[in-house]
Amino acid sequence: DGGITQSPKYLFRKEGQNVTLSCEQNLNHDAMYWYRQDPGQGLRLIYYSQIVNDFQKGDIAEGYSVSREKKESFPLTVTSAQKNPTAFYLCASSSSGRNQPQHFGDGTRLSIL
Amino acid sequence: GENVEQHPSTLSVQEGDSAVIKCTYSDSASNYFPWYKQELGKRPQLIIDIRSNVGEKKDQRIAVTLNKTAKHFSLHITETQPEDSAVYFCAASESFKTIFGAGTRLFVKA
Image (tube, rainbow over all chains, first blue to last red; front, side, top):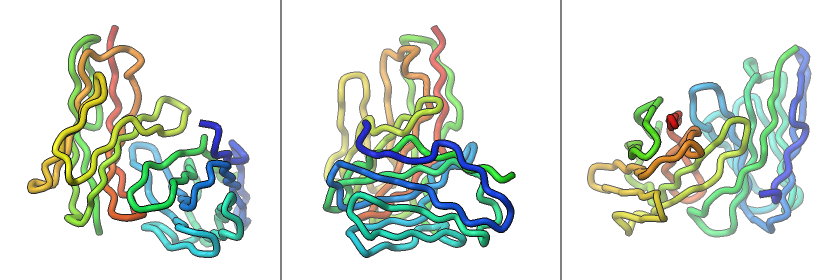
């Protein structure tokens, strides 16, 4: 579904550089999530946000940062502290309330130059 | 930490046969169990989900069963078709935190 837009589709990072991945949704969802997907592994939760101006760390938050200034937007910054950033990053959103199905974007593939 | 184990990692079936994927979870507080299908190069999409107050749910060729006592749940696909070929992820959720299994790559041979 085209309700979640991630950009760019491909991103290259130089050593020591911070990069920001964009995630925008027009589904009017309160909750948003960031996952990292590595080959042969499931999705691992980086950060999630239940409402605007609030977010919590997931299982692998080290080396990442997020902000949630608007309901529609949940950008993820991969900092230079993340030593192994090469992965496929997926953003998702869900409606308010606990245990709701998540809708995913098309993902951003990040590689190191 | 909490985890979800998924088996098998790869499954190959003949078109028309059934496919079964099994998952176990460790967090007894989990009460929502979605299944996602991810085709090559595409986003994961929800195919079916089940909540802890239900033991079984069916949607056409797809069914999911849940055994809360044993902490395991399974996906059953009947009359498989080539377009069912994809990676399937199970997940266990408690509130907003969802833990995913490692995925099962399903091949349906025509």
